[in-house]
Length: 327
Length: 307
Image (cartoon, rainbow over all chains, first blue to last red; front, top):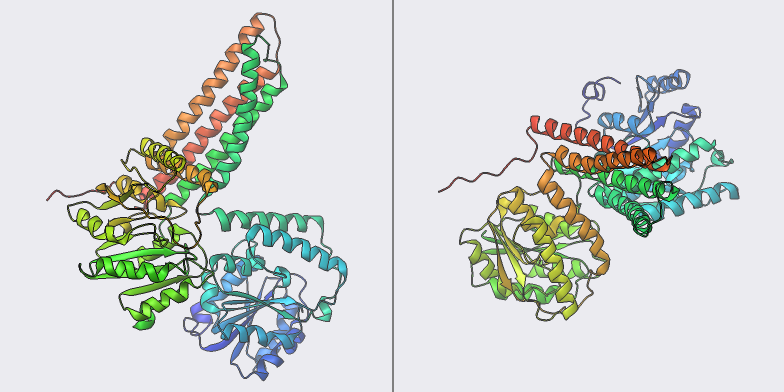
């Protein structure tokens, strides 16, 4: 991608009602057809908008279709990354180029009926800061629904949110909100979760599932493992970034306490005259103490990192200050 | 503006009108003041009642937080929006008596930077008095800051001292300790009255004890070793290294006596490995301090010019 200031032509000042960002990475559908489907309901609302296709390299043929549209005067822009990156990096790199006050993020394939897209933008205009689409009613089979339910039981319990379709990937948000959400690594799919935990007003609205999305979403085992790792990582980052020793200290204290208890028991036996030097329990106790100490040490390193970090970051979000409204 | 009073509120709807009236009555005869009611994500009518109080009196301001962040974040929001030269914090449950505020401010004007309220605990049960006293003795012994009541939110501060403090996690309890240790503040205590809760529900229980303990340990360690973390890790490494060497010696002696053990040498080697690991971790942490110091961002000793 080139310099945003040059390429976007005034990107520093939002000039449009809406920027639609389509991330083109895995399994994209024909983009011209996707554009045609999505643009009609938005155009019907009379908003000024742009479609920004942010693509990983390797989709030349698909992007060429968009070039034809662009030459035909359609509000289409194409940004191509220099090397393959994740959704989060694509979104982050695209942000400075956007000219819309509201941002609608879509995957490069149909998830929901395009007629429902304006409803997401309407909710943002009505005051919500992040609006997520929930594929509902769903047309796919029980397997998809069961795995979706299982994932959300875990997400909602660990991250203390109430969401039903994090994986949908169709969201609308205010540009200013987008700028404040730390999107990196593999956490793009969790934008709604992160926003909710940071205190933004997040809504989820039902939009009927698109027929093209009706297929069994069975992924390789590695994908499920990666998602689980993402969720656990997010759990730690969102709940313990400010207090890492609480997390590591608790784990370390439990392990070390168990180890000390075992070693204490063996010490009593030793005092009573028994030989403990060849007891496997001695090794178990020592390992537990060592693991406990390691967990606490890692927590301490985390605390020192937080302590040394420059002040800033989102500790709280202010909804309103009555003195501002008075002035 | 002379005095900013900051009150964090979470589900204290019934207490808000009484609290505002009590603060107004206590401060109206003194220097100019403002009251910042920080609504910390209440789910009852707290925000509405606070807004009503603000609408009736321009000296009352309401800061509404997007969700329940906890008392430290709520206090931080209040401190960051304060306009007073002196900032006073107190609980929103009416257990602190606003009539103590002028005395705290007067004590601050004697030349202190922080005046911490110290409750009489007259209404506490003997068990609660005992646990409270033990906990505060522990805090005092570990921090050496001379604060006998870390649980009392009623305190007066100079604004510039608050601005110099890193306030995150649940460190609000230890603001005087932080102020004394990091900002070089002159801290003293002042006896204050404590009333029983009149309305609403207490947000504190025994469940917070382990977290407070971890916070305390964290604070003490950071206070002592934040600019030389390698020392802390080296001490811990010495303990494990010593145990490892002792284990090896013991195993050697047993071998000399004809006993062949596998477990004991394994334990000794594990401890020695742990000692090495802690040393490496200490080096990495020391490196971070070095980098931050080079960037001019690490905590520096607070200096005060004698006048």
